[in-house]
Length: 350
Image 1 (cartoon, rainbow, N blue to C red):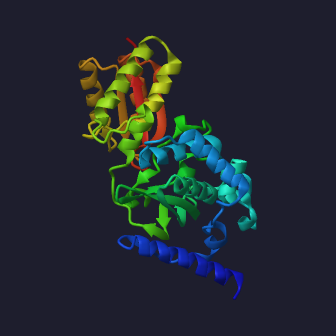
Image 2: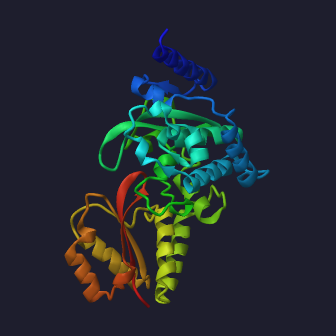
Image 3: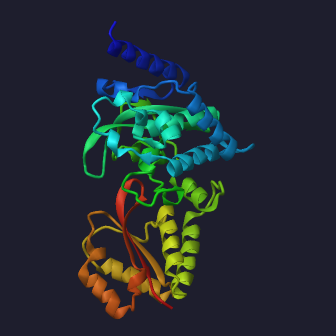
């Protein structure tokens, strides 16, 4: 029996055992042989260096009484803070031999590619008594290229969720660390992930209880609140932005704007979300907010909507509304699910 066949049987054995344990919603579409060497599940827990790294994490980041969700978030933040994406390994012809494709790479060398992130997340989670798996498939990157990819699923309060730590810590995010988490790929549904992830193995994920709003609120406050009013929290952040902008404190203003964008600038009632080519609706929205005395206005638009960025619109605001140009933030940010969404935060000086 050749090595490839043995590995296929081994992978299928893992899949079957998981299917028995969670038979109600497990799916397989068929494993791509090109992924087997790279993303095959393997037990690294007996490696002395890995064991030492795992024990260090548990001793320093996990405390008595933590919920499964809080443990998960500690794992994600730890990996984002300590692991760098290893670009050098991507073009290697023998990926199965490279540490960056293993948990060892992430936990010991602090360099990994997607399977290393995924395996490290899985190992740390299991050592924290969480139910997780590594899933494989394909993903479309920011260059519209489709390629093999690995991520995770986690079981929280009776439901499965998708987690992609690699894409929470992407190589394009030059400001690394937990403060720069995008919160686009933590505890998301299959529908949300399907925009750029095509899964070959794993469980059906439809729950939203531990989704974007809860994660955003927790990242911003450290509090787990399933009843948090996210729009109210957005308003609090906007008020803080207005205060620091009026004080000409650019550093804190931008830091708070980043936090607002992490939480998501789109209101629950979609009142600040615009689709279309006309400036009229945006102008009306801006004027109505100014009449209310608001000097921080967030606008979210569809990626194909360019009117928010039109030269005429910018000139009109500068000439007629006395916009503090230095505080205007123009960013591509996913405040609406995983779709890249254009977000503007306008700040008017006092």
